[in-house]
Length: 228
Image 1 (cartoon, rainbow, N blue to C red):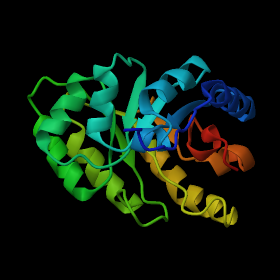
Image 2: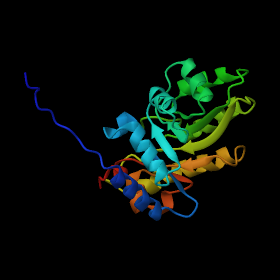
Image 3: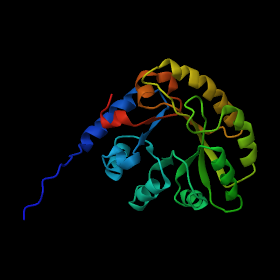
Image 4: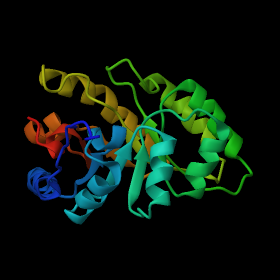
């Protein structure tokens, strides 16, 4: 019996490397790039895309789940990984620390569970996510002080980043400045105690059209895969 015909997709990793190289030329001096490879690299293949973008000059990659991060580490990927979505159990916090994977604190619940790392001896690399207007994930700016107070004496917690996400940078670029107006004071507050925390906000659209939003790092997704 003949097999049924199936569609196949051929991924041009050279094109992805080219797109990353081009985006890097747009960055403000001192800014670097994470590339989103969540959801199997948007269907392009997480591991080959992750390797390709780092080879092209990206600092590292961003994923949505702890499982995606572990799969990359198990496959031998050693560059920087940031888990942008929530963690769902305390053992995921512990595993991210063991695997040297950065993760974002995106809710009150995560902020509370994070405190359980006290005394564990596991160094967690944390990015505080600020809800600057998307109203989906993150702590509100007014919550920053209490969060910082809660972690300041926990030596296992290293606050390495502070981040936000632009709600509609493509549809209405004027919202970028509105959100930055809420985000940047939070960055300043964090840096009083964690002066080396990396600030990042820009997505693909902001990377291309809003250089003032590049800050220390950008997070590109669709542009890497060839979408406007």
